[in-house]
Amino acid sequence: MVISGCAIATAILLAHIASHVIADPSARSLAQWMPALVALLSLWVMRAVAHWLQTRLGQRGASAAIAELSTQVLAAVTARQPNDLAALRDDAAVVVTRGLDALRPYFTAYLPALFLAAILTPISVVVLGLYDVTSALIVVITLPLIPLFMVLIGLATAERSAAALAAMGTLQARLLDLIAGIPTLRALGRADGPEHRIAELSAAHRRSAMATLRIAFLSALVLELLATLGVALVAVSVGLRLVFGEISLSTGLTVLLLAPDVYWPLRRIGVEFHAAQDGRAAADRAFELIDSCPNTITGSRVVSARGAEIVLDGLSVAGRDGCRPNDLSAVLRPGRVTVLTGPNGAGKSTALQVIAGLTTATSGRVTVAGIDIADLEPNAWWQQVCWLPQRPVLIPGTVDENLSLFGALVDTKTACAAAGFDDVLTALPNGTQTVIGRGGVGLSLGQRQRLALARALGSRLPILLLDEPTAHLDAATERRVLDAIVERARAGDTVVVVGHRRQIVEIGDDLVHVSAAEEVAGVGV
Image 1 (cartoon, one colour):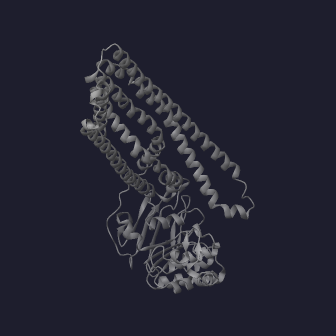
Image 2 (tube, one colour; image 1 turned 90 degrees about the vertical axis):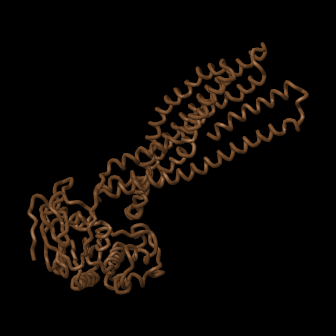
Image 3 (tube, helix red, strand yellow; image 1 turned 60 degrees about the horizontal axis):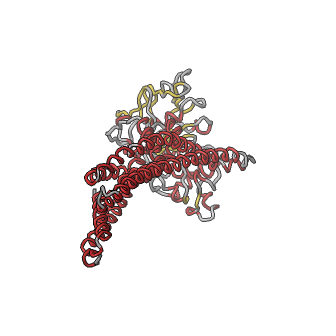
């Protein structure tokens, strides 16, 4: 409103000053026009300050909106089951890390231009009509052509922006997979294999981006041409009537200065529209991700897991290839080691995920001290559970940061000795301050497993869920780790181990056989 008012007032005041200076030679004294010039300068300053404030508020609002939408996407996507999350990981990563950043031009440039057009353009037409009806009619006839062409161009640009976002997502996913697999590819002598596919994807993305730019440049040319022709028609009409004395100089100058303000906001919308299209395409995809993810209702009850029995009652989880596990019933007692055995794919790891509260059972239930795990408050439950998956989570950073990732250890030295990681520390150049890469790059598979085991065995949480804990370990280290697991159970913790090797089965106090749909799950002690 301030910008629009200043624009119209500036045009009227400037036309008044110019017409009197031109028509009346005696009215050319600077002192005579000083109040008007001060008022004109004040309007320019006020308009500049309004633009600055609008840009400042737009940037802050854009940052807040992008952060809020990114948070909603992450919350919605990570609320899904682990198996479903893997399919959305790459798509969500592109939207959050790069796609939504393109919304900034939408908030800082496109929306202000849209509001300015909704305010300045109609007011300018009304003021124009008060001064000269003929010029107002010319504007009313030519003005609708700009929105019409904007709509037609926008339909074509929307498809291009969606295609560009999809190409960017595919390219980023391929690059991430390639980077993560470089050590393996180099070991197999295939490091140069995917470069042709990456080049093809990059070229496709470039072609899509250039096609969008072509449309943007052509649309800008069309809109500028329409606006220029509209102003030119008004100027020709005013000029001819000035020659024949049908309009005063003051009125003619006012009309000429107001006419560009009628078309300028719409031209700006056309320019900013293309800059905002990529962000709008990313926002649409973000809302699709949010809407596609179920609104999970979490429980609110809190229970102490120390000394409590965990009961699996007819547990089944439906997968793509059937139920796994199928109708599993068992009692996990504190102070005892429970070993889950069974064929590959039977659902042993899935059972651990259900106990940890990461996967929802299709049928049956899991109770802790008589309370269904679905009724527990997730964060309070997770703070009592130590879960070691088959592929432990290791972050880029120091070894010490990875050891304390899920909370400080009770005794780092004892934990590392129990996992056999103390031998690894002595061989590392900087000990616990040695920096490792994503997923433990810089360590061998066995060293990564020992690091994760040290973190788990030193946690002192009442529930310990271990999935193939002795994978990639030599016999001596395996024996040391198994002894430490038994010691944790004897201290009163609930220990559940997945494994089928004889060494793991032998430490089990309770043996639970897990089977898929074609078998029957049972419990052996």
